[in-house]
Image 1: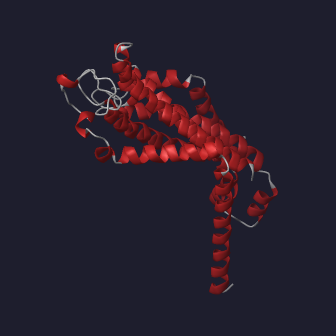
Image 2: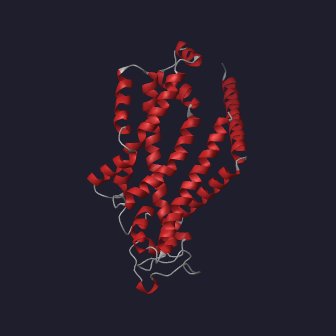
Image 3: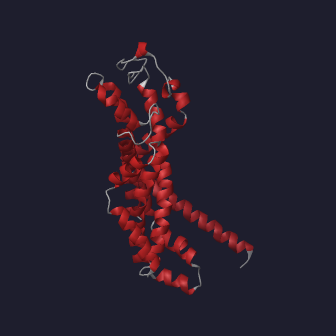
Length: 297
């Protein structure tokens, strides 16, 4: 086969991938709620990344006290009011988005690849020692409720953002491993897998070039829907004092600080609560749209 033939094949493969992406976007764009969720999430991400420039009082995200402006209700100067230290609640919510999105990115960035690889190995070598070891480890973690396990880990370690991330990561990987294991077990005997073996393809190539592409739809959909749960679990850990510590503008920490001032100063709690709702809603809407996209393939 000449270099011209190889370049022609590569060009056709790129065209096929581009056409598949266009079809996927067309199916996704037909779901208006999913598009709305994508717009909301994009806006939140941009605001979080440029929080120092889009917030009116960036210094309020750290150690700041101004008792002359404390307990102010929503007004043109402070759209979500101020808290007990005179800090702008809107500013702190926007900075809180940064910590919530960081938690989602780090947790899913570790959990999804790790769980996927372990599930592929266990499913492909079903019935072997590798299968029993991976499934045995996952059953240990699954046997304990996720939030209880995360709280137990955080209570042992020093309360901070890093340990909260570690706790959520340790409790989440088995769900991806078990899902991918189930799909791999059903696909490992498909004709194209046997054909790849007959051609002498390496096991790594069979796992990641033949099997994995057929599972990306469910994996991506689950990851998007799970992002909302990471936000909720992370906020819950911080709410009980085992996550980010004050004055860190974490949404869960802010809720924990502000809820003691209910109902007199309700706007303080409203800000971080709306922040969590916006994030959870946007991830769920996008996840529903992705589910429709891959269901139509």
